[in-house]
Length: 614
Ligand code: BG6
Image (cartoon, rainbow, N blue to C red; front, side, top):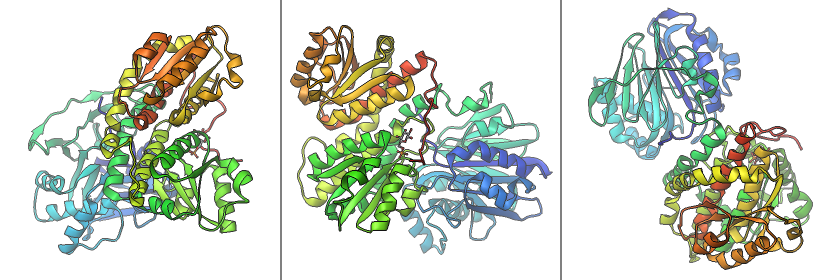
């Protein structure tokens, strides 16, 4: 199953049969359906039929900008809109989309990343274009405008555009001098909506199902040119027109975005394939990691803090920085940092604040303290680059997981871990430190290995879930780099199964907790390739007390011989890749157990996605 790039922004375009005062209201309703895709800024452009384009945009979510501009009162016969999840360029009015072409004859918006934006920018500047923004979307608008204003048809113009612009994107484009609207799909999702008195296009299905059940799912390479009653789909790669099937949907709107999964939790487990791929691609093409590596290299001492799942990710990152870059780094829970280290943090120290939301209060307290004491620099590792920590810390590195909707974190954890491994390797190279055990080729295998790991776990988790559901508690043990993995697996299960698995260090188990083992007590062992003998001996301590032993890791004869159950990962024979992949079967077993109990893993009881309270 090829999944689209995870949501990062949202675009929508519509052409009505005739000018109408309802246009603005329809567009606001579509924007509200798309609001989860971007709340850094929102913009709407409307052509009101007398040759003008009315463009209004600003930072803020759809409710705030509609309040400011009265979007729902805009009237006209066609319009486009964009909700921005900032990836490049801080969220501000200038960088908001849609964006005008220089002559204001055309206006466009996009969702995605033009990875060769610097090259395109330089080329167009040489041809006389002047850019007002840091937004790669502006280059796309100008590139399209350049070809159209030379008299090319939309088909010819977009053939030229995709010949120059690289990356994953979807874009929508409107002109003052024509009722036709153009939309192109190159990697990010895009759908066409059909009705008797309008045609529309959108990044996702719910914003179309709001108005019509009839839609066409567009594919990468499709250019669609439409007005209020006709459309044509042109295949840019093959240079030919095609028909695509029209679907009359029976999906209810609320579940349309999870398609084809029953919960965002499982969809986001699968999005770890594209999420890790987008991190590797964007780190490689933008160098956005450089400030972080420099800050780590120059720091006197490095403290790294986070809460919940982010803490487990940074704990694994601590192994990477020590093992690969020989950087001693002090990991703490967010709320533990000040009580433990506030008396020792000094000049030149660096506080790394790890938070997918960038808003967790426990970390804000650390940030506020550092700002007030001015004793150390702060650096945020975030998913939401429009967040408080992202905008206020001395430095920021994004993890590019795009929006994570399910409350329990899955794909953001994996991208946090990938961020730490990537930057640990870069730091070692900056320091001239030779490291073993992981190469860049290994790292670039991760997205496909994630896909394989998900596939390999599908059946085993179905077999194991009913067994573990018989027990209110269990232990999940890890050693070396799989200790944080065991902790994260236990947290996932607690969050959605509401049971009591304890994640802990395997060698510590015999110093007390072993007493808990009796007949059929489940103990899961998360192994690395090189610690098989040690893990086997730990397993035997449980087996000889009639406990149930589950192996999480790459299969071997030794484990096959004594384990009762296995959650296998691909036999990659690499400890670093094992430490990334072995969380996946634990995420999936937690999900399997949760839905067996009828729990909703996306909104577990008592929990919230971001805790902005102490
Ligand atoms: C908790 C969430 O409230 O905050 C967890 O339920 C999350 O899923 C933790 O890991 C930390 O959040 P963040 O945004 O700081 O990574």
